[in-house]
Length: 344
Image 1: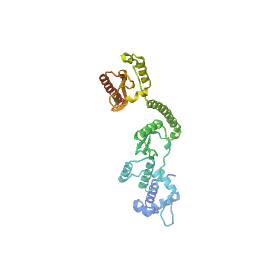
Image 2: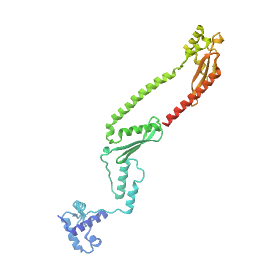
Image 3: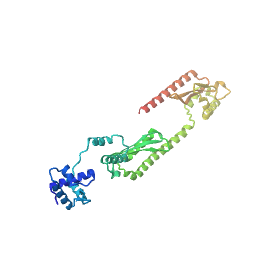
Image 4: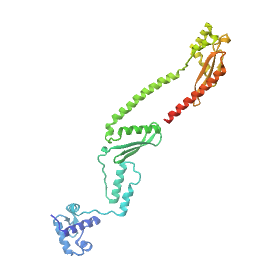
């Protein structure tokens, strides 16, 4: 049944005053405070009619009236209008979330508290379908060698950040590489997909491990090769150009020396120019073998030696000059290659 305008105004006044004071509302109060143009008798008749219609209740015979559930339903459906906020309330809401908020958990708590503080009622905030939001970014921010801040950003904003603790220590580069991997795996996925994608990241890691294992095996083989002393000989036949080695026995001595490379190595260990005379330990000094050696360096570090094997009467001055220059060129080439790699 539709209420008349006067009945609507009286019912709204009863509800507003009762909400404010929680005390039964009398006809006298309404006549003095709200409807001075109406007589008390008219207001009493309207109150009685509203009571008969089920909108008002009278707790006691001599008491005023209070709204019924039917009155509140009608109020919400037909009488209620938005109540403007105060300047203070508006400022409080606008400033409340300006501080750093770590994640959805804190947003929920802060929102509930703000609503409760302003309304002075118990508040509740429910977040639905959070698992369906899309992941936009995952970031690990190192806080130390064994801890990092995890930040997950979705289409709904920052939904989570938390501090993670690790048993092992990791470098910043390792955290960055992990962040890159996580983003490659999960950007565009939902939070619910994380469980479903766990096998995918396992496969990704397994692929990396497979590649790394092959690389590691190759490095190990290469390391084993490098750990073996590598002595390269070139131009053995040139010894025959020198008259001292026209004798078969002398040639045999020379070939025996160069065939057993471990006998040569002790004469190639100096950090500077070294001249070793009569390394073949022959009795014939005129036809003995000498070795001139020099170290070569890369960025100042000695990584090997070069040498010349020849008759005792070799041109030592020329050989030394050649070895020194070759050493400088080797160092320069190696340095330039390292510099180019760093630029790339």
